[in-house]
Image (cartoon, rainbow, N blue to C red; front, side, top):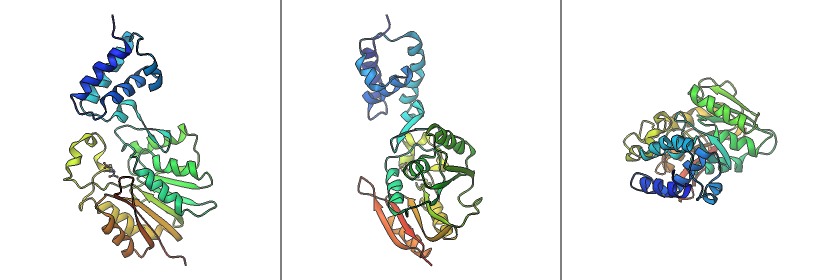
Length: 281
Ligand code: GLN
């Protein structure tokens, strides 16, 4: 006889606990819910049901991947961001909770009325989608130099029924011709190549979305230096960065001639986002 759902959950939890997972019971429930195409609540309410043969077949490779350290979001294919299920594959970074601060900091300064926004290095499209959802009157341009990422971002926009975002292949500003954005937002790569954190689960995420030269500052430096040419009068730049970068990034904003510069902290109290605007005139 096949194991029951409850028995399978216990076995899977124990296997995951001896591996890398910090949340083995939750991971087991999420994987099973995904394989069954049911909610976690359904799984927990059906512990005594017998597992079916085809489910056992589907779930074994999912569990094996998790035991190798593959992030749960790449196994289920989704991560929630701004209360939306965002499709993810190893072509895109998995949206982080701290990036919701980037979205909030952008929304806080956006003027009322129809605004024009640019999301640089959109990846899964999570940031652009959150902004579009909150500001249906805005027009957005979301760019990435990765074609594979753009495909996923477009699929996410479609799944959310969002039609106000235009997607474009561009290495930062390279293919952009508008010069009057009200706001430019970016979560660029900012991890130093020697950072030991890169040995963890993030090793499954696209390195080009994580790692930047110059102690993680090279790409931010480019973005901040080039932004003023693409912003309209009074336009804002809002950038996510590493927790040790606050002072340097705000310095770069000042060098680029920006005003109203502020470094903002994430929920862990760490410097995570810097924003500033170019003067009105
Ligand atoms: N916050 C991510 C991490 O710690 C890095 C994201 C990025 O480089 N944009 O893994």
